[in-house]
Image (cartoon, rainbow, N blue to C red; front, side, top):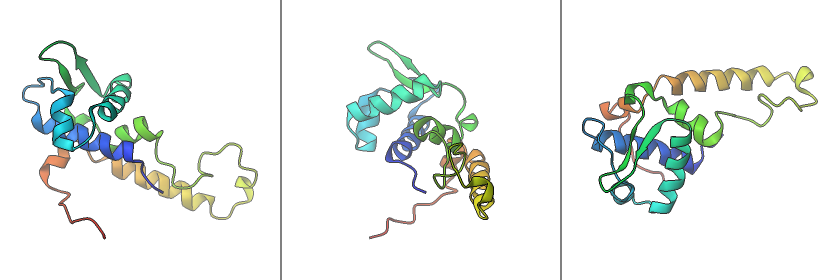
Length: 142
């Protein structure tokens, strides 16, 4: 299973928004774009989805921008992945009502259980908890 780039960038953007925002003060797309090294246009697409699903609030005007719609401790990584990717689907047949072999499949339960464990794990990690340095940067593979 691969989580999309949009989910990864959305998580990074919310984490950065949380770190930069003081007293829930709006942060502009240009500031976030600069910090994340992403284009304003791409970030606007991401924030449009986050706003539509009420994870962020937009404020218009000269001092406008985005802020979290609720405390960062109440926004889970699963919430973000669900908004951006439609949820966790480890293999195509999980939750696939059109699967013709599901009832006879000897390993379907494995994938379903894996999905449940992944969701529980990601539900337990909030945007706020990313600040705790609980997840150190280990470097990127070559």
